[in-house]
Length: 126
Image (cartoon, rainbow, N blue to C red; front, side):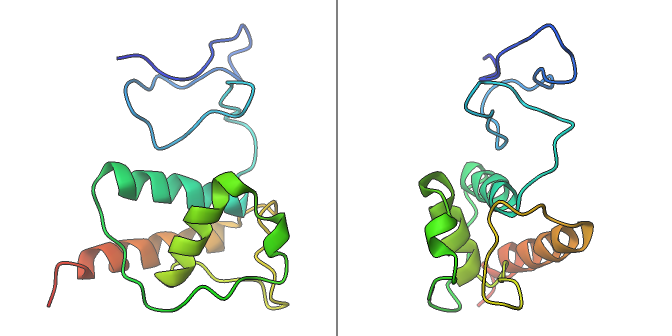
C-alpha cells in the first residue's frame, strides 16, 4: 500500500512515512504541511477518521443545534463537527461560534482527546 500524500522536494512539506489508510488526510494540494498549526475543524476530522477506521461508535448524547458560524464549517468537516458535538466531545467558543478555521490550543486538544477516549471506552458498557 502507498500513501496518499504527494512527495515534494522540501522535506518540511512532504508526507510523513505513512502507508495504507491514514486518518490524516493531505491538503488539497496533496501535501501534509507538518509545520502548520491544526485548526479546530481539522482536529475533529482527524479524530472522526480515526474512529471510523477503527470501527468505533460514538454516543449521541445531545442534538446538534448548530453554531453561530455554522456557515463557516466547510462541507468536508461538517459530519465530523456534528458527530463530535453530538457525542459531547467538542463544544463551541463562549460566544456560540465553533471557529472551524481557528487554531486548536493544547488545552482544546487535551480536552477533546480525553472526551474522545471516555466516549469510546463507555460505548461497550451497558
